[in-house]
Length: 553
Image 1 (cartoon, rainbow, N blue to C red):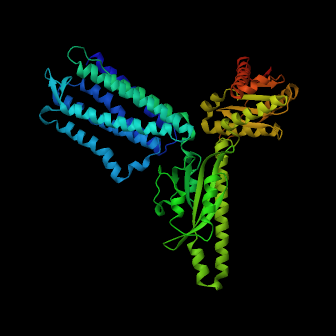
Image 2: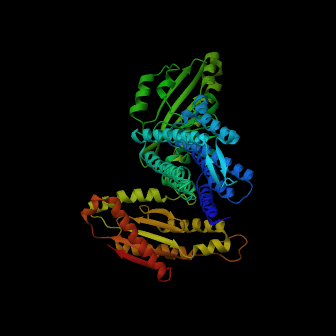
Image 3: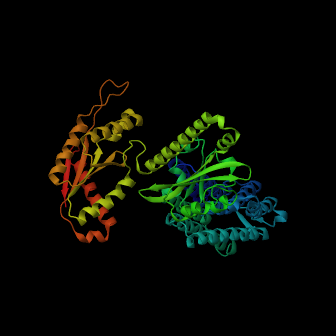
């Protein structure tokens, strides 16, 4: 086994590390499942190429060689599947279209396995480390090119469409990944197949292209956490409600269907929802045109309508926006089957009590839906552990507040604090105790704050407090009170004989001088402020912790 063998092995290990990273760091959704399957296929190529050079038996070498090219067919299909899901074209995966997608790759894979009369590959020098490719190899390359062209076409259509900016950003990233992989595959073919005889083999070109493309794909997955609206909707909540729930993104594409609704509709995740087409299948006592006009032109307005479908089922349809800081990121559409309600009305007027109970049930369901929507909105802006605001909400709020303060010359302050030696607590007592300590610290901090102050979890054991209309003297007093309150806070933990307490380091930034030039670039100016207070916190920790370092601008 020579040095060249370890090139592919090294690239395989790097791909495996990326696979573990994605699996451990993301909430597994349908898109992530597709990508992980695709990534798993990509890992097979370098390990098979490595295996070919580690054995001396030609039959075993041929087995690994065939396996690697079968895997290349799977990678090509994976390219297309990942592109289809990412660009919202999941409707292509219906039965007839699925056959067209998979059959070419399957046929080529069968030809590779059979290798009739060596028309795919023949050994040179009595082994397959040195080999010559036949016409089936070039048919396989042609099929790969077709898959690449279809993938690139779908991405180009997504880039020129009216899809959300965050979706286009991901598509651009994947476009780069597929382009890089394709470039290296063709370089490998050119140097190691077309110019095989006059030039020495260059190992790992295709494997390197696969690794680089995987890096681009991982960046695309992590760049925008909000591309899967179902992350906002807690699955356990919507699946336990008797109402049928359909969750759409801001481009009217279905991203989630709850279990109650799934058996009764033709929609699938990834398909585009058409409200007008749905309403055309039934009739209503209400004005369908008015409802549809409101739905299309006033997306932030809650609307409802009752429809009678041909199967004598009455359905109450309600629509509500999913909003994050007044920005609409999708819709929740609920379907309440009220057929039984109407049957009771037509059956007898003597069952008024039953009808009353049914009305109460509908009110309760509507309250549950309203509560669910409030939970969805809260989940988007709060930290899951502490219940206080998260960093995303804080930065959006600060950007508005800072610009307003500068415009009206209003002084304000920002506190950035960090729990001292928090890693030692986790290492000594475990992460559960560490989480309890964070909750206890947040509770202590809240006791010291005014109603107008804004507390948010900045990251890990770091917290930020925005103090509006607060001078340096007032901010210093508040910071001292926060520090002393936290230090005196004692936490009793089961099975630990003594109480636990911590100290905090604080960076304090006060803005007294205002430059109107900063209004032209609020985002950059806010980043400067956050960097300043972060440096102050770092200095506090550098000087020994459990202290306050103030900065005035």
